[in-house]
Image 1 (tube, helix red, strand yellow):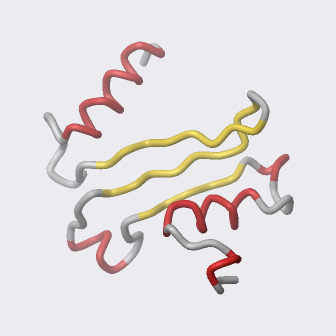
Image 2: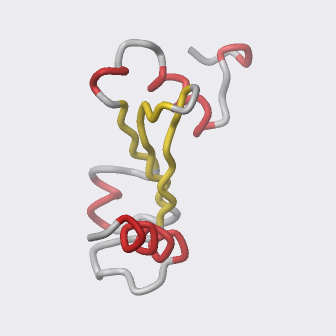
Length: 89
């Protein structure tokens, strides 16, 4: 798959167009720090039976060389709309 084909596939997934039966509408996001990609997240707009039991609405990963620097926690807090200042930890 070429890069333009991959980006087109992500856009179709975001819009929920031509999805395979086992896929749901989702937005794919990339986390970067100072122009360096450190991770990614998938925000699923609906859940199927499989995702209800294993997966959920938000999936994210931090690249191994960027782990243990707080990026995953920051990503999680950002996606859930919570902040440490609001009493979350």
